Amino acid sequence: MFGLLVIFLFGLTGYTVNHEDWFGATTPRVHESEEKTPTNLIAKNDRLGIVESLRSSLKIHGAMTAFDDLDDRFSVGFKEPGQIWEIEIDKSTGVTRVHQEMFNFAAVINNLHRGRYAGEAWRWVIDVSAIMMVVACGTGIVMWLVLPRRRSVGVLALTLGIIGTVLVYLFLVPGADARLKSNIATPTASSPAN
Image 1: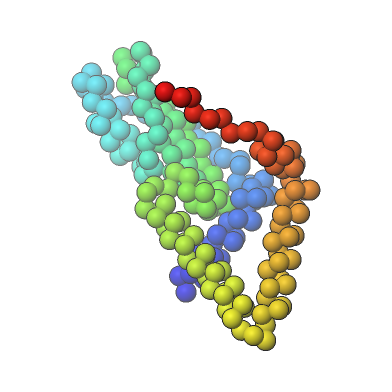
Image 2: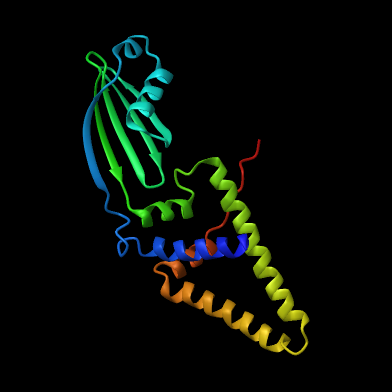
C-alpha cells in the first residue's frame, strides 16, 4: 500500500510540476511585516539566539538558508515547502523587516516532489520511493517476460515504448538532437601528463 501511495503521489506531483502555472503554484501571497529583534542578541552577535528568536516570534519551522552580516544589518533567510522568509535586521535598532511568501498546496507538493527545502528525512523518503518504483517496474517487466503466453506481447510493448520514448526525445525535445550530435563529435579531453 505504501508503494501504491508513493507511485500515486509522485505521478500526481509529476503532473502538477509540469503545469505549475495551471495550479497557481508559482504565484505567492506576500506578507510584509515589521518586528523587533532583541538588541542584546545583536550586540553579542549571538547568531543562534537571533535565529531562535525569529523562529519563535514568527513561527518559522523551515530550514535556515542564509545568515549574512551586511555591515549595518543582518540578512536571514528561511525556506520550507510552500513558504519563504527573507528577513533584514537593523543592527542599531533591532527593527526587523519580514518578507514572507506563502504558496498554495500545489506548490507544497511540487516542492516535496523535487525534495526542495524538505530536509534530509524527506530525501530518504524520495530515495526509498524511487527504489520501490524501480523494483515494481522491474518485477513487472520480468513477469511479462517469463509468462510464455504473454512474452511476445510484453517484448513488443517494451520495444515500442523504448523506441517511442527515444523518438520523442530526438525529434520533439528542443535541442536534443544537437546535444546528442555535439556529445558524439566532441572528443573527451585527456588529462595532462605529469
